[in-house]
Length: 128
Image (cartoon, rainbow, N blue to C red):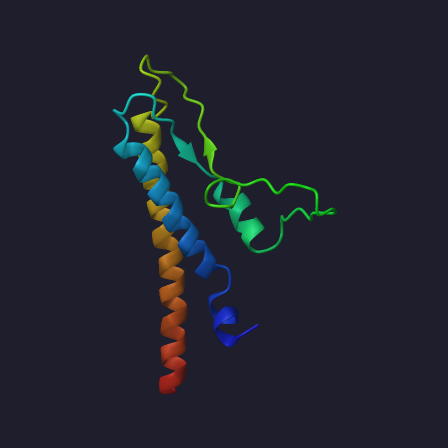
């Protein structure tokens, strides 16, 4: 493990994944009026565990298939709407906006943690 990995820890990967989740949620919001658009999302904690090697399933045979989506992570799922619309769109604007707001707050918190660690490194290098 390099020094950078030990300083940033899980937060480096978390920041990228939080950004990806906000992109997915923004795509849902942008397509709220598109007929037959299906809202998607992923469970952040499950993906983070898998990225850190804590939740991987081992293939015991070369003939086994790995399950994944277009991104290859197997985590992007379709959401089931609480109130289905007549045009087949599953985006519920209030739900998506609430999820996006929470995701933005979590992104900012992760960014603040990383900024604090970078500030600590700067102080150490200056000898403060």
